[in-house]
Length: 454
Image (cartoon, rainbow, N blue to C red):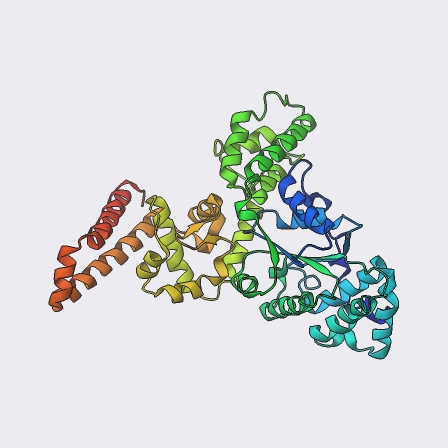
């Protein structure tokens, strides 16, 4: 396997020194999700050959994948993509890395992989379809062939963070390769794929013709309880380290506040703990900064979370549209107004399908149908704090002003069309709900602007 070694991303393996051991699930958390995944893994006859673990940014997908990857008797190989690492974001390295690990975890196929490489020494440099076929598919199909063959191992392959593969086209090809493989009933491997709910990945699974077990972490009913468990445990540790009384500090009321503010987002909770637990700073003072009781004079407590949001926004292809959309999003939030998907399209001067296309890269931040809303309140906080969002800052006053302009333009255009077309004019007068709805929104904006600082 020596000529395979240089194409292996060793840092992408679950037990690599590059992996942070603290990224695993905190003890006592994620019990329901882990139980569901392990039950599926323990059943080699489960009809689903792919488990798709998905959820918005920061919800804890990689921590779950890391935890599951240590089920050594069931997991044959793993690959953890990481967007900012050129070795771990390269989809061309995926199948050589999986083959390398499978050669040791399933010894019966090692000689078959070696034979493929001897037959074609350039195989690791070829298209990923050829890599998968020769390094993984054929070896496993060979040992599973024939009724007299010995029982075939059916290990699980974990691919974490598929959306962090640097090439979207490669992501699609990887999904197609895996989908074609598991469609063959003789192919014994099963796959756990975790990712954000990016549109092209959602498209694949919605069109896939074979059973798939899907776990949506955005709807995990135990997320808030798990975050409370995590915060309570970690604050108790910090209290001991800083010689504080854990019975008094931080206090259940403060923990409840932080759990509520997390919106079920584990990265929010872990960011708080990293900030408050700095051994060179006062945990009491830093918690006061987090709760907004004290001015922050140094590093932001939400720097890690802010970097995550900025990275997603920077990847959006149409930055001009993005800024217009964010202004509408902030205005609707400030007005406590739930707007339907089609209302956003109208306000932005688009049809619904065009809006769908423009928001395809935002699914990890937004719920899109029937109402458009953010997954996590912390994203609104990010947008409205210029020290956190920088170029993406949207003040409430600016958002409301742009919103008012758009509603006014719509009313003027609608009235003008109605006056020019008698039938439409009668409809405009007799069906005032359309008009009054927007006038009501406009009045809310006027009142909000009157009360808002410039």
